[in-house]
Length: 442
Image (cartoon, rainbow, N blue to C red):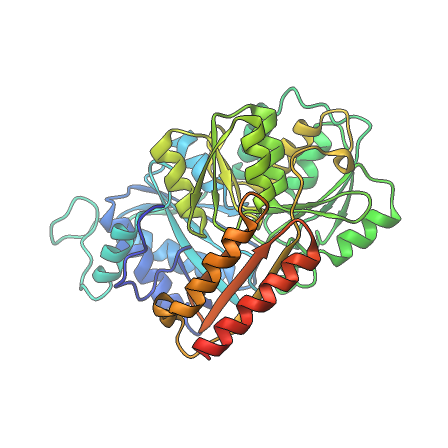
């Protein structure tokens, strides 16, 4: 299941440090984090990329100053999808990668996440050490000692083209000639890369949300706001539609009927297409996925929610493919990170000559999910009546569906999820369990 996050964290969450730019995530904090991280890993060459938020340039300057203050050279790659960082680290041997993005959050937020020289996100333990170094004055530079060697700040030209070239190499045999594709780029980091990549492979491409102004990232568009893409898919004549999030590490698809194809289905398509021995997914993955993998003879590892736990499971088992229902899909054969563009191309590769509408990855079970506000989310562990009810309902659904109750990681909520052969049964079972949770925990 993977190790739990380090309990003593104050700044780092499961995806770096994130908050309102200029208020929580200030230039001062960004500089200090970059300086400490550079010193901690003894980095001499550090790649910095960002998404399209208006605060990105300010934070880029602060991070670059922190890197140089610790003796490292900051190489600024500009706007690039998050997976570009681990990919370019591997290609050019950078010691550290810094991504400035708050993913699918609104423009007011921003974030900082670090990738090590191996292309993987820094471990919980290293992130905690970086937090502990923030109060140290001064942070020793590269090479140690009391005299700090100052680094340089330079533009890293050609980062976007390097990323596109790597995608093209991976999908060199994918011919999209004659295919009509609609892309929603969330006014984010994929606004140039995604349309260009699909066009290079021969597709006719129409686009939504490819005019970032610093404030419109994820605003009514992208993978968290699918209504516009769904309407356009129903009205147009497209083989497939894809919506990316703000930093380009997630993707969801929509077929010509306007039906959303989530991460579960995209992973199922990929797993069957690639004939992988095993795949790692989270506890939120639809029961229908497990049934489809069982039928295909593909082993499934289930992890807690969070891409870092999926990645951990893949590394432990030596597998290549995994992801989340949200559309964060990892193909270790390409890059050790979610990559929305690569995942969309993999879906097109998997359906082959068919349309996305005619996919045969899995049959989703109807799902009912209710968030119940409780006094204390930690009290779920000792809620005996709730656990007894879960056991009864789970036994009744054995082989046909499932029940999942879990506390929110950030709010006083208990999430009650039921999957069953029919929507009516899922709703009925979920209602009974919600009543139990409310009776015992509210």
